Every structure is written in structure tokens, then in C-alpha cells.
Length: 379
Image 1 (cartoon, rainbow, N blue to C red):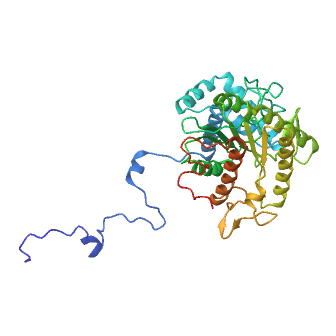
Image 2 (cartoon, helix red, strand yellow):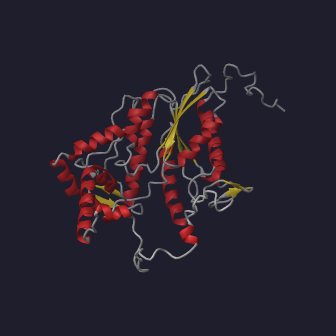
Image 3 (spheres, rainbow, N blue to C red):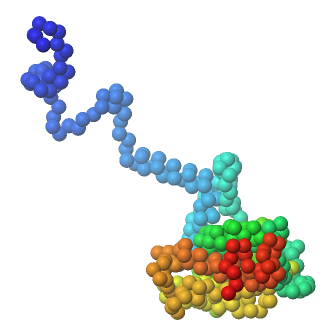
């Protein structure tokens, strides 16, 4: 292009050629760059004390608005001095929130989010509060007929099974569901509840849940698994007791007995699944104590069967076994079940239900001899 033709000026020419204009102010090298709108905004740095005061005020207001949640969180802590300190610390916030009616605003937000929290002015210490609510179900003294009734379920009249418990039942529930997915003669309901158990009804009240949600559905078989969260302190008559004490073990046995009696129905099977071996030696010993309680209390009740999961999940060893034949049975925490381990335990659970509840008569649609459709012929 010739010089006479109109050239587009290079907007970056000043960066490539020549020095900057002489009248352009030079910024010292130590001076940081700043955006023009910051200069125009007239913002001034706030004193550190004022910033700190604003932050503290915001935290106090948040604590007042969420006083119920803080109280519930403090109550859920393991029994001991730390829990006592946490519960004492939230008392002033609860009092101010109650007087200032801040709870009303918070409850409106919870309702909008479909969440609930126990009001912090309600005592939820859980001290000796494990009781079986009154239920219309048959009590042991009034039960008639066989302790466990048998029948031949069909797709039109399936066997009603309920399975639930602590976090150990998460994988177990999934595995049992898969085991019966093609068996319309078995109807399964599940409810794993993380961090629940029998020592802290203030966190999750299993007797109340069974009364309100489970027993009204009249399950013919109830499968429960508790214990992994239970070796922690309990508050009895205002005094914390620990799992190593005889008093704790006596109280835990009482709670197991209450639940076993509560779950008894008219011919209903209660299948109590024990805890497997644990990788940590101390935790394993605590689980062994609980398993012994389950087994002894089940032995005293004809409607309860104890399923020992230890030989199922440690088939070739007398202690913790993480895998068998290269297949993982347990998760990396040394506690929870891996998929293959859950499948093994689910197989044992279904087999126990069939042995105890399902009669030997073939169900409708079964071929003569009781073999399922598509099964291998005898011999």
C-alpha cells in the first residue's frame, strides 16, 4: 500500500515505536496500579476495629437466628464435658432469640425450606429416655399362635418385609433390593438412618419411628441392624456413663430388649443382624460385646432370630477380613460394607427370611417341586 493511500493507524504504535509523550505523568514503580472507578468511588479504608466489630455483630445475629440449630447440634455431641460446655454456651442465644421473637423469622425460613429443628428451649438430653411408646400391636403377654407364622406368598399377596437401622444398612438395603427385584412375591421397604442407633434417641428415636411409621404397615418380617454408632456415652439420670461400664451395658441391654418386645407382632419375624468384625481391635471388641447382648436377648424371645454376620463377612478368618478371593468385602474405613460384602450379607438375610417365614408349599406360578422358573432341574 502506497503512503498516499489511507492507512489505518496502529493503535499500539506508541507501545512499539518511540517514547511516551513528555507531558504524561510518570507513576512511581512502588505505586500499585488502581482502577479509575475506585478513585471516583471515594472509598476509604475502614479501621480494623470497626471491621472486626461488624464481623462479630454479624456472627451474633446469625447465632441468634439459628439458636435452635446450634442447640440441636450441641445436644448431638458425644456425652461428656465438651457436650456440656457446648450446650451451656448456646443457652444465652436461645434466651435472647426467644424474647426477641427471632425464632418466628427463623421458623418461617425453615418452613419455606421444608426443614425442621427441635426448639432449643425443649430439653432433649436423652437421659434414660429410651422407652417404647404405647402401640396397638400385640404385646408378648397377649400373643397367641406361633411366634413366627409361615405362609406361601404370591405376587398378588407378597411377603411384607421392612429393613432398616444405622449406616451399615445403606449398602445392605441396596443389596437386598437387588436380590428381590425379580421376586414379586416379596415386598420390601427400607430405612437406613445415618448416625443413628440405640444410645442417642435424642438424635433419632427408633421406638417412636417404629410406632409411627413402621408397625402401622404390619410387616411380616422386620430386619434391623444397629451397633456401629452405639459405643458412645449415654446420659442416665443426668450422669454420663461410658460403654466400658457395667451400668452402660445393662442399660443398652434394656434398650435392646425394649425394641425386640416392641417389634413383636402376630407371627412376625424379627431378624436382628449382628455387627461384623471390625479392623480396629478396640472397636471390634466393643462390637463383640454388643453382638453378645443381641444374641442373648434374641435367644430369650421365640420371635427373634439373631443373624451373626461375622462368619458371613469373614468367611476364611476369625478376625477382620477386607476381601476374599481378590474381591473387596469392606470399605476403606474398615467398618462399612463394600458391594460384594453387602451382597453376601443380603443373601444370608433373604435365606433367613425364607427359612423362617416362607412355607415349603410352592407359590402360585412355581413349578412342581418348588424350583423357581428357569432354575436348574434336580439332580
